[in-house]
Image 1 (cartoon, rainbow, N blue to C red):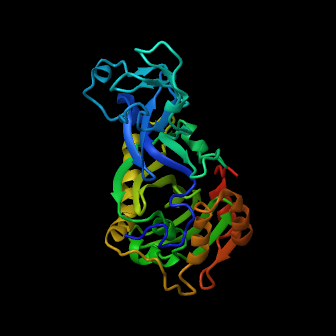
Image 2 (cartoon, rainbow, N blue to C red; image 1 turned 60 degrees about the horizontal axis):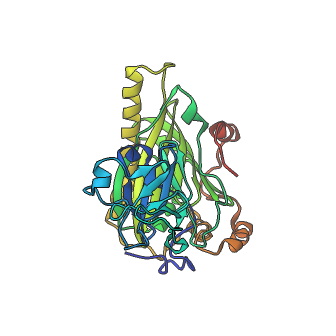
Image 3 (cartoon, rainbow, N blue to C red; image 1 turned 30 degrees about the horizontal axis):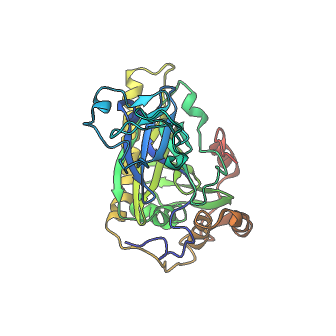
Length: 365
């Protein structure tokens, strides 16, 4: 299992960016104890409806403030007060900013030294997304958002929770440059292929005849930062969006989610439309499962023996490296990498088709 240092990504062990840490619906039953980026966190929804994420451990005596299910304060539903949370051991209350604002058996000022770190999290498209930055900075860009999510004719997804995999995010991102796996792995060898790098965005445009389904498949796929992929796909005249997300749990271990957004034939959607949306997501998951299965059984490719027609792996890896570098170095990566890259033996996307595929996409520049 390769780690960040093996890929020479540093100086940080974990990347800066927006990452999924939970499905929004998971917070309806109380706080969650979660682990990402080699650290433990407490994730909960305040009474205002806002998701809140804090470091996991109470500064008083080191209690995990979200892990207990048997403490009386938890069982009686008294742990959450407004947007604050009480430690299940002694009842110290932490506000959403991580400051202790009440100690039930103490009348004096709360010690400032008891504060724990809070993190910026957002509810986006049924996902709780966290901004992680090893340097502690504010977000450099907004999380991705599809306009179709708020269109009642598009049927919202529920996430497929695929669990953890002993694979570094670098090798998940390698798929973006990998033109030549589309035939052997997915049965749709590409007839055109290009990569487009735009600062924190990594875009792939491809199209090819899917021999298993007897139809042309075209897609525009993009990462917004290192952890969240969205893909707009045209398949046999039908459109859908796919989500694939990876978040580091520990160095070299990733947690993965998947989902698909489908357009109903009717507005509002009927029961048949909802069944269709389930089939769309199941079909997308089946295709992604081919990648996932390969990843589970491969050794780490710290070094790729790259052929000219493979795709621009080295440029993709250079793009990914920016999120491990100090943030003041990001512009240098953009200057070095930004641009469109083609494989000489494959065609370029038709101009009209590319324009059509990008209609409605929110790039969040």
